[in-house]
Image (cartoon, rainbow, N blue to C red; front, side, top):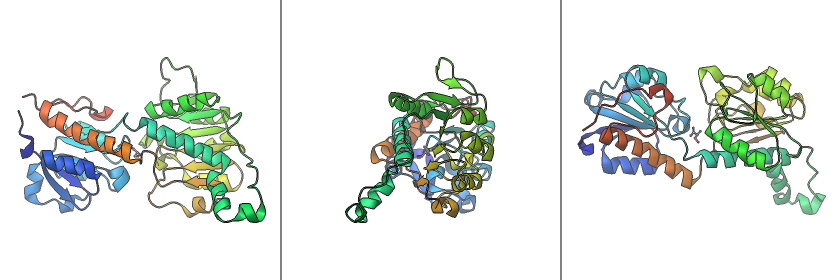
Length: 331
Ligand code: DGY
């Protein structure tokens, strides 16, 4: 049985405090200020067997330069279901397992997506500001909202676990659902469109849950937005890299679409000024899964993956690119 105390786990940059505490209690923990291979000393290079990191939320990238600086690296435990902050393909090709935190955040992110959609069409943030600014007393009722959720047709871009949880919620709201994915999901009754533009032209409400990959980069572009049309509402709860933000800002300002609700951006925490200036956006600082309850569950799963790998030789939630990396510890 591997003595977990003798296993060195490196945490580069910020990570949830509950993960840090559990790793400190279980393994030999080493922390670095940020994700930067230049900060890794020679002795540390030789001893690190696992990395736990939160690049999507804390910034930085666990790329090939970082991983190849650690010759004994066996596993990267990523905090977050999205692992675009880790070069998982390189890891898989070099025998390094990457794990993420699926399932434990599905319902929270779906709740946030629906809240963001409702806020975008019914202007709840602006209506509250009207009340707080004394305008209810001074000027009377908040103006009727031009947009509503009623009679909308929803398209989901990315029908994975979170996409499905959003679809189920919106189905219960009485809205028809269609989707676009790399592949049609077997056994799912929602209408499938094999192109994103095709989906956008069939609906008026597009919710993107797509992961940030080279294939999805700027997929929501001027053509897709124009297909969505002047009543169109776009909501993004996936990754900012999937959107051509300049095209989105233009579409919002010239009436190509009606409104957008965005939780994620291409270069967080920097939000393009044109989106900040647009009156028809609701903008959130990447809070999809950000409750104490859900972030603690994600933090646990990061550590449980490390314990499962070094204790039993099998990670709990490996990502697809590294699913076939063979177990190294079977004692
Ligand atoms: C994830 O898990 O990828 C989210 O974006 C973090 O909330």
